[in-house]
Image 1 (tube, helix red, strand yellow):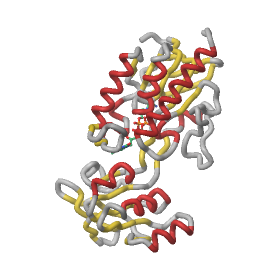
Image 2 (cartoon, helix red, strand yellow):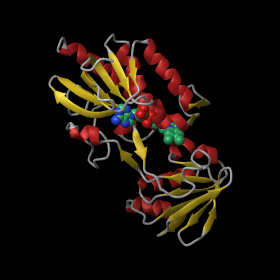
Image 3 (cartoon, protein in one colour):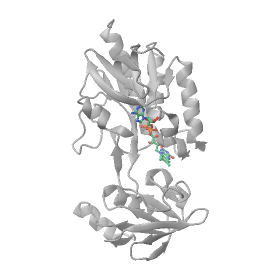
Image 4 (cartoon, rainbow, N blue to C red):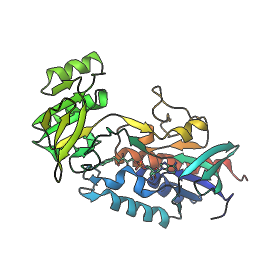
Length: 303
Ligand SMILES: Cc1cc2nc3c(=O)[nH]c(=O)nc-3n(C[C@H](O)[C@H](O)[C@H](O)COP(=O)(O)OP(=O)(O)OC[C@H]3O[C@@H](n4cnc5c(N)ncnc54)[C@H](O)[C@@H]3O)c2cc1C
């Protein structure tokens, strides 16, 4: 690929949001470059059974099919991360990790979000075998089980309340409950077993998670451990170019058309906030892809 090549639309992120954006933009006959690594998509390790008309599929396979669809409609793919973005009105400059310099008329940011980890022994080992970062995605795999939720903010407390509909026992482990009075009352009055002022030291088991061990050595037998500590935004790229974030400075703020505050830049998927679900990512990707293609056509010939 030549440096300084100009595209109509460049999409950052080859997860479901980026792929769906590519499919919709490329079908509008604009040139599309999709950047990123499928192996770094949150979907890569998922087993999906809650996406419309897909009752049982591997995330990896969904990414492979999505990539083929995008390529079939003319999308070019570059498996590299973007290191730098800058504006050169009306274009945007992109520097990739191998130092390629590219230009685009419109940009779609679909770089997902990385979940905050606990950093304890057993967390990585049992990921997908008891450890999960998504109650919404995995609660129903723990029907009748004893589970723990780690975290004290609304995602964790809401997650614990959701899990009560599935699990036999739900333990909530947190240093402090940091939620509204109403939510605090709701969880305290529920069947959730709250361990406030406690920390998880490790997750133990053989083939899958079997228990959590707290800082004081207490061992709680659970087969599911939901780590709900929020997300680490991949925001540096966006904020450096002046993209506005939401009130809590966590996610990219967009209009219903997935436009950011910078004309020509769109965003879609997990980077725009929860719920972190494929259905939301592809819906937003579709809107962003169509919007970017229309923007480019309106912009006309430049560069
Ligand atoms: C274990 C697990 C199970 C899940 N199960 C389900 C489920 O059953 N159902 C469901 O609906 N959802 C599920 N999810 C959530 C779902 O995977 C996400 O909501 C979805 O993948 C978000 O899509 P996205 O395109 O926004 O981001 P992602 O899929 O995370 O993709 C982000 C992309 O951005 C790229 N990227 C990052 N930084 C850069 C950069 N600097 N330059 C270029 N590219 C970059 C990455 O390489 C990646 O390709 C699950 C998630 C996990 C972790």
